[in-house]
Image 1 (cartoon, helix red, strand yellow):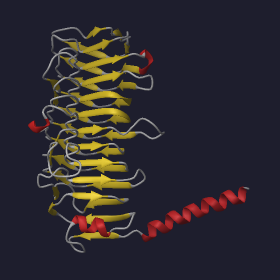
Image 2: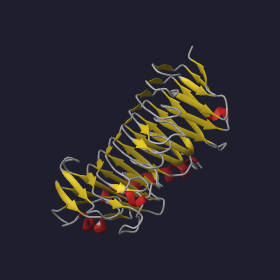
Image 3: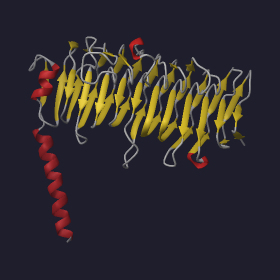
Image 4: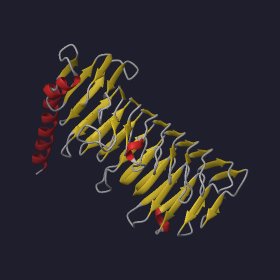
Length: 352
C-alpha cells in the first residue's frame, strides 16, 4: 500500500512538472499584434507577456493563464475604450488566472452599455475562476457594481492601486462597491484575500464606497482605504453577510451622504448564524457618518462579531462605534472622539 501511495505521488509530481515544462510564453506585440490574439492562441498554463504601450482592447479570458506586463503598470495600459469591461475572466470554476502589471482604465458599464457583463466590474469582472490580480493600477472606470473590480470568484487581490472609479448616473443610484464588489460565496475551505492595496477616491449612491462584501469568505488586511464615499452604509467597507476578517488596515476619511444606517468606515451586518465579522488591529481616523461615524456593528449572534485592539479617532457628534440588536463587548481598543461619545447603541466598551 505504501508503495502504491508513493508511485501515485510521483506520478502527480511528474505530471505537474511536464505541464510546466510545456508552458509557453507568448509575446505582444512581438509575436501577436494584440493581447486578445495572444490569449486566444495560448494553451492552458501559458503566459502572455505584454511589452510597454497602450492597448485599446476588451479582453476575454476563458482558460488558465498568466497575463503579465514586461515593465509594469506605469508603462503598460489596457484601455477599454468606454465599453463595458476592460478584462472579463469567464471561467467554469477551475481555471487559474493571474493578471499583473497593468493600468486598467476607461470602462463604461452602466446597465445599458455595450457588452455582455454590463453593470458589473468596469475594470475587471471575474466570473467562476481562481484569479490573482496584483500590481495593477485600476482607475478611471465606471460601473454600477464594482466600478474598479467585480468578482464572484475565489480572488487574491493584492498590491494594486484601485482608485477614482465611479458609479455613473445611469445606474440610478443602484449598485454597490466603488472599488471592489465581492460576491464569491462562503462555502469551501479557501478564503479570498484583499491585501496591501490602496483603495481610494470612489463614490457610490448605495453601499460600500471602497469595498462591498456580499456573501463572501474573505480576509481584508494591510490595505489603505481612504476618501471613499457611499450613500447609506459602509463608506469604506460594507459587509452584507459573509465570513470576514478585517485586520491591519488604515481606514480613513471615508464618509456617508445619507443618515439612517451608518458606518462611515465600516458597516457590518451579521444577520445569519454562519456570518461573522472579526475586526482587529485596524486604525480608523477621520471617518464621518450619522450614526456610527467610524463603525456600525449589527447582528443577531453576539459571538459572531469581534471588535478588538483597534485605534479609533474622530471629531464627530455621532458616536465612533455604534452597535445594534445585541450587546457587543468591544475589547482593548483605543478610542478618542473630541466632540461626542466613543461608543453608542448596545456597545459595551472594555478597554482594560
